[in-house]
Amino acid sequence: MEQKISKIEKDYSEKIQKAQSLKELDGIFLALFGKNGELDLLPKEFSKLSPDERCRIGPLFNAVKQELEKTIEVRRNEIREQSYIKLVDEKLDLAETTQIKQRQGHLHLATQFKKEIIDLFENLGFYQFDAPHVEWDKYNFETLNIPKDHPSKDMWDTLYIDTSKLGVEPGQMLLRTHTSNFWSRLMEKGQTPIRAMSFDRCFRYEAVDARHSHTFNQFEIAVVGENITMANLKYLSDCLLKTILGEEAKSRFRPKYYPFVEPGVGIDSLCVFCHGKGCKICSGTGWFEIAGAGMIHPNVFKLTGQNPKKCTGLAWGFGPDRILMLKHGIEDIRYFLEGDLKFLQKY
Ligand code: PHE
Image 1 (cartoon, protein in one colour):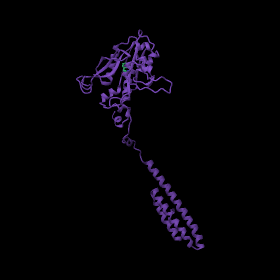
Image 2 (cartoon, rainbow, N blue to C red):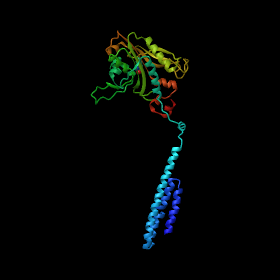
Image 3 (cartoon, rainbow, N blue to C red):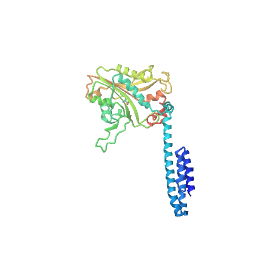
Image 4 (tube, rainbow, N blue to C red):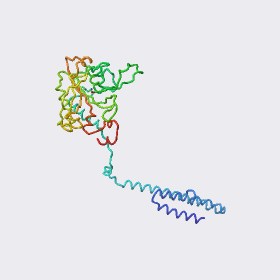
């Protein structure tokens, strides 16, 4: 028995010293102390020993057991220390990290465009004013010279808010159909002169398809002050066109009816694809409409408590989503709201 114990001690001490990894040490530990391990089985044979022998073997067994346990622990610490030194010694190559392909985010196409336009008009002295999306009929229609039940309301398919629980008359609260509410609000506040802009969401009761969306952006400017004329309107629309479509961009004004402007115009841009020759995109006309505009109607001045004899004003609004579709050949307006990764990564 004594020899057996000494052999175990000798063999395993060597094995422990040779072990190179913690995993290897775990294996040795199990072979010794685990269920049916060498040192686990041995005491079962003690019953065969005489009481004298047992008195000698018992302490010897315990001493060897403790010794081997200790040796394993010491070796375990050595291995840990070595792998730590190895880690510290390894040089960190920072250049290596640049080889990992990083996924980088960027601003949405509509936001990039917004920034570009806002920057341009900020340089021209315009400030941003954002009006509420949930709006009163008063600012979306009434003060813009569109009285209750007037047929011109049909120009905008409106989404009305259910106000039955709010104690508000039906038809008074809506999702704004255009950004023009921002300047009816400013005029009513009497904050003239005005040189303001808004680039923001609007909503219409539309059947959604590739060209129509219930939620879309508009960019609108309004200037109110002394001696504001159509010439200012023409200059500002040319500034915008040249910025977004390039230096060779050309515009034309066409008479168009909007209840809140007089005269009202539709601003057309020379088709950037066929340069006026006529193509599929401009339906063969050589032009495509980009904005509605005009000189602010005297009635709007009166309805917002302003004196139309003292100042005049201009306004125009357009749909940037449409321009972006034309510029980039985007076929479906729904991409703007969908968060489709392929679309987002492309622009
Ligand atoms: N608000 C109009 C629309 O949404 C556009 C417009 C703005 C027209 C300003 C004239 C002046 O269709």
